[in-house]
Every structure is written in C-alpha cells, then in structure tokens.
Image (cartoon, rainbow, N blue to C red; front, side):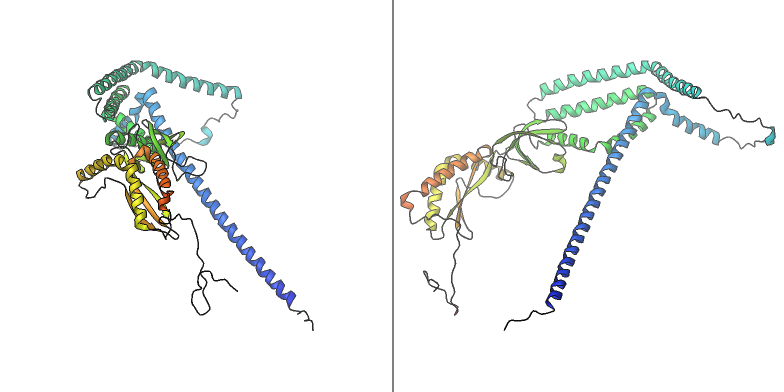
Length: 443
C-alpha cells in the first residue's frame, strides 16, 4: 500500500530552509564584521603612518628653519637672550604709577570710513615684500666677511681631512679597520670645523649651542633610519661582521657582498631551497643585485659563511628499504663517502678542531665523512654528513649523489640493499581479531 505524504513535510522543509538561511546570514554578518574590523585596523595603521610622516616632516622643517636663521640672519639668534636680559633689568626698577586722563567719546575724531582701494593694497603688499628682500640682502652683504671666514674654515677642514685620509691609508693599509678609523677622524674634524664656522657667523657660542641642540633633536627624530644605518656601517667597520666577498645571509637576503657604503650594502644574490617556485633553488648565482640598509646590522641577525672558516657542514640522505641489510648498507655508504670526500675533508676538519680548541669548546671533530641512521614511515634514511667549502656545496653534493647512485646499482648489492619508494601496507583483520594471512582474498 503506498504511503501517503505527510502534511508536516513541507513545513519541516521550510523550517530547515529557514535555519540554513539564518546560518548563512549569521556567517555573512560575521564575515562583514571581520572585514569592517580589518578595514578599521588598516585605516588606523595608515593614520599612524601619516602622523609619523607629519611628525618627521615637522622636525625637518624646524631644523631647516634654524639653519636658515643661522645663515641669513645670524645676529637675530641672540634676540631671545637680549629680551631676557631686558626683562631682568625692568624687573629691578621700582614700581611706577601711570595717570590716565579720561576723554569723552564725542571728543575723539571720527574714524575714517573710507575703504582702502585695491590698487593701494597691492602697492602696500609689494612694498612690504620688496622691503623684506632688501633687508635680507642688506643682512647678507653686512655679514659677507663672516661668510668668507666660515667658507675658508670649511676649505681648510676639507684639505686637512683629505691629507689625513691619505696618510692613514698609507700607514694602515694592511689593517682592515683603517677605513673606519679614517671615517671617524674625518667626522670629528668636520664637526669641529662646522662648529667654529657657525660660531663665527653667530658670534655667540651660547646661541650656537642652543640652536644646534634644537637642530640635532629635530634631525635625530626625522632621520632615525639613516642614523641607524650609519651606526651599522661604523660597527661593521670596527667589528668586521662581513667584508666584500663574504657570503652572508641577512634576513631574506643571501649572497656574496659586492659593495659596502655608508648607508647600504649590496650583494650578489644566490639561490636556495627556501626560494619560491620560479627562482634558482640551489646555492648558485641568480644574477640579481640586492641592496639593504645597514641598520639590519643593528636590528637584525647576520650569518657569515666565509668570514673566519670558509667551510660548512652538509648532509645527503639516502633512503633504503626496511628489509635491507642495514649494517652492509652503512658500510657501503661509508666507503663511497670516504672515496669521494675523504681527502677533501681532512684539512678543513683539522682547522675546525683548532678553532674549537682556541675557543675552549669541547667537541670531537671527525676527519672523515660519517653515516647516521634514522627512520621514517616507509624507509630507513642513511644520512652522510661531511664538511666542504661553502662555495662548493652544490658541486660536492652532486658528485656524491652520482657516486652513491652508481654504487647502489651494482649487481653485488642486489638483494642486500633494496631500493625504496613511498608505500602503504593494508592488513585485513578477521571478525575474531586475527590477522589475515598474506595473499588472502575477500570472498
């Protein structure tokens, strides 16, 4: 007998549809709220960035205004100090009483209600601008002897710094920190020369110190990154974190140092296994030059592969089947690695051991390759560990891989060292809990 349709089914379907719509609406609202929150965060970040830029621009404007005041009107710098002295003088005078005569409002002359013609306003503005330019020019002409003396001081400082740099380079050309010493000496001489020149222009050392303090404060806030970059260059020159030709890794930059400037460092980029698809994924040149600021020396981490010890440890993993003769496979891998890398590794291993002894680090350094064993889900990994030059890492890895592959393909290893590939094993269990025998087929 056919079953009659229930009158409640349409209603139930409608309830389920309403519930689905409610869930979709809830997800849509949550998504909208999350998007609005992200937009608010982005707006706040943008506002903070604009505020930071405005603050830096204000600091630069203050510094620039102070420098213009020192150059074009040095006699005006001491106005504040003269005003303070005048205020102190007036404060010492006795109190006086002023008598003011009251005059009726009707006795005052009537104010002129005539409007100023436009031509007169334009003429007055032109006269004010012309007067300002004439005043600037007269101040410049009046202070021209001071400008000449200040310029002569700077020229003498330039000549002294050039001669001193040549002398230091000639005397300390074998010392790797000679460049940093010469740069610091030049900076000190230039600061002294600039201070003397500004004191000649201003004429009052107190006003000079105050003005330079304001200018220095403004510039320190506005030029934080260049100052940090110069500090990083100075530290690198003194400490020798890296030099031209070293292979380094700084942040996401990996390559050989090509040029070191006061504010930036340029490297020839090298590839690596962590590079995204489409890039060179081996330690070989990519042909690109990358420049990064020197403040990474202060705020980041520097990895130098060739500074004091131009060798690195590397590994090659060879997977064999679980059914292989493990001791025999280890012996074969050890023999191949010794044949390929034995002579190449001995001298670097001795140098590495000497460095560790000098640093009082207790560690046994093998003078030949080693083979280590580890397990994964489907194979046994025989890992060959060896020491090679940092710039020849890929070359020796390729040579070792070729030798190991040719050795494993020899007929005398057949049945003893079994090749392997990712695999899965399925085991059937009977209802009574016993395992099905191999070859068992479901009936």
